[in-house]
Image 1 (cartoon, rainbow, N blue to C red):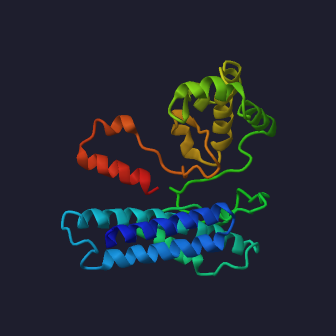
Image 2 (image 1 turned 180 degrees about the horizontal axis):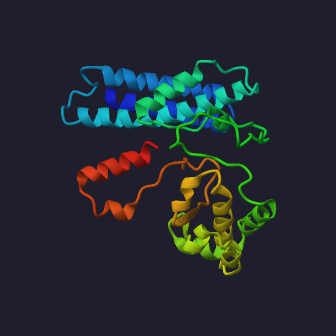
Image 3 (image 1 turned 90 degrees about the vertical axis):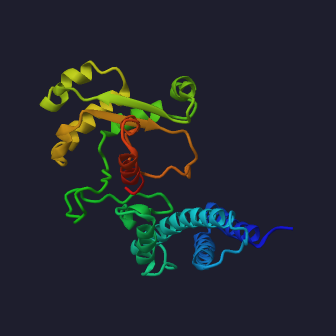
Length: 276
């Protein structure tokens, strides 16, 4: 017979899984409702002075598992709320409440996040149509925020990239399959020539399409983001995953540096990476 603690964990897990299934099926309203129920149950369990299991050695484990479930459900709920509120702001979803952005921000703040993408970026059109935004518009965003830029690559270069990364291309069958880690990483050095402006020479001597893209994008971004002149390299990651591959936009960490730092510095580095 299952203990009350096990039954509680199973119930919370089932609510989160039901919310995920509803989202995949396109029923965002049901997904949000399920995740809210899961979150409320987690909060209720964590507020109780006496956990459900009387075994003292299991109580801390129970609370830790509930805490992890709450964080997982809370993140998914916040993203769905921002997506739906973004569509509401665009006039594409009348079911959203005007308070959903505030609710999402409260959830993300409790998870330790300080910055996020605009709800207009997260609330993309379900029909996948793109609304371009004037890049010169003053967005009043903090200087350390992540920036997404449309049209950074010339159309012909972008088409070449699409062709190179098409399904079943040699990139995936030869290079990517040899990586063996479910991702591939390319690091392109930006030498003094790039920063000084000798673009044509570097393009002529480039060895890959990724290198050409790095050089061109670097040059196009210099006027808009002057600090980019201090960049020394560009890293390109390739992932072969489903569209909902559970790999969100994030600040990366320097794993090599982490190995040389003490415990306190390790903790700081991880916080900076995960809370971006």
